[in-house]
Length: 265
Image 1 (cartoon, rainbow, N blue to C red):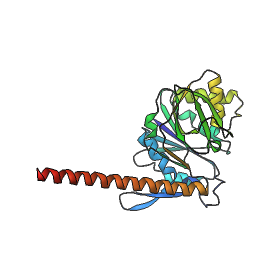
Image 2 (cartoon, rainbow, N blue to C red; image 1 turned 135 degrees about the horizontal axis):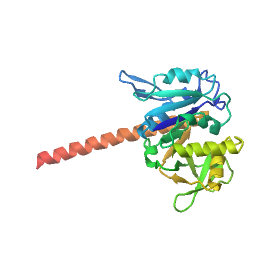
Image 3 (spheres, rainbow, N blue to C red; image 1 turned 45 degrees about the vertical axis):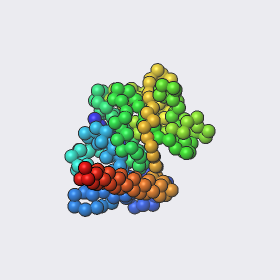
Image 4 (cartoon, rainbow, N blue to C red; image 1 turned 180 degrees about the vertical axis):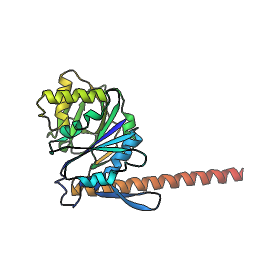
């Protein structure tokens, strides 16, 4: 299973940083020796690996060699390859830079490397055999790609950054078999590569008889591409860490209480 990570954008909303936005430190992790900063893109990488990815493909721009240096040895035991998007021509163009690496029967995971979302095992909720979107509820869907579903969870339309969106569920990541990715690429080429946003291409795919589903399994989603988003990500990670700590304490209390009752008996 291949995880495609489009990381070629300029990140103009949060620059100047002096480095690629995908390497922005957000939170921390333990590497076996101690605690160190965690690049925001590591959250997506970890979620892809948890979802079954056994190799990664980073799509980078010509000036983003720092991403190559950061992930040159892969991530843990998972190898990484790198392809270059010559010009920042949108998400569709970035994703399709990797299409030649995908086998028709191989599932593909795709997400945005400047986001943090939960649950961390969200990719596992998506089927392997068709285009499937992992959906998250947000308060301002007009800033994202809102996904309109029918009663059976079939995607009717994706409303790209549309005021008055009919749904407050947005896609945050998606999965599909390799042959669907190739079909989308062929359609994109037939449309003169005019689609910058993935949502407009999917709408054309649906009109042509394609099928996609949306899975409302997401619980929290933050775009870290702005300073407000960066602060929101820190707050989200803090809340999640506090929740995990409390869960450990509750488990320990329950275990201690159970052991006490057992001794009394």
